[in-house]
Image (cartoon, rainbow, N blue to C red; front, side, top):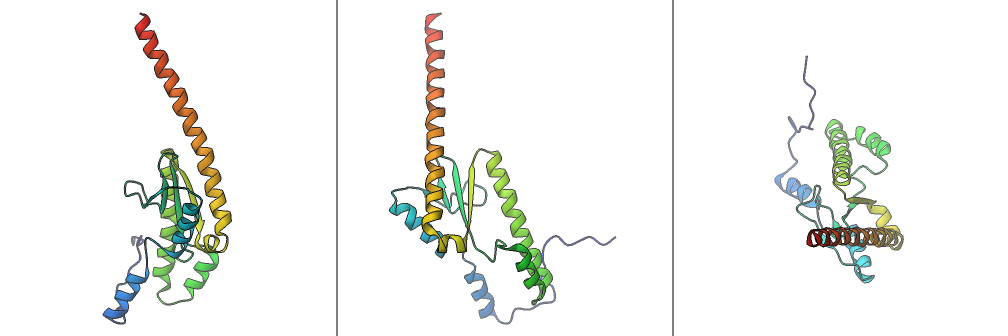
Length: 176
């Protein structure tokens, strides 16, 4: 039984040139993408402060509100599979189709897995498509602001409850 390949392969394919290979690698920007910068500027303009690309979090979210445990990803339409079925159909008709279809599917699966793991560890994950951020920046920022405000209230309530419990424990220990 032949083992199914789990990762795409370029076996038998050569890059058109060293220059083209370097350009392709360089064009796949990982941080500070246009949509990410647009959203960050809008959040900053509203007085919201955040961290960038937290190295300790799975997936290195683009924007992080640490106290509220909110991780935000600005997903590029191509690499993260926006309108996945149409994208895969188009890729299937192109050059090296098996590689590209597998690559985009893996990216989508990875995104789902990272979101699940972060949520299981208590993080709120927000994912926005590149086109949505660029077309509806204000609406996306409104959504982020609402989630941050809600989580801030929840964090304050948890801290208050914890403080009261700790105070009660201290008083109980003193009274004995």
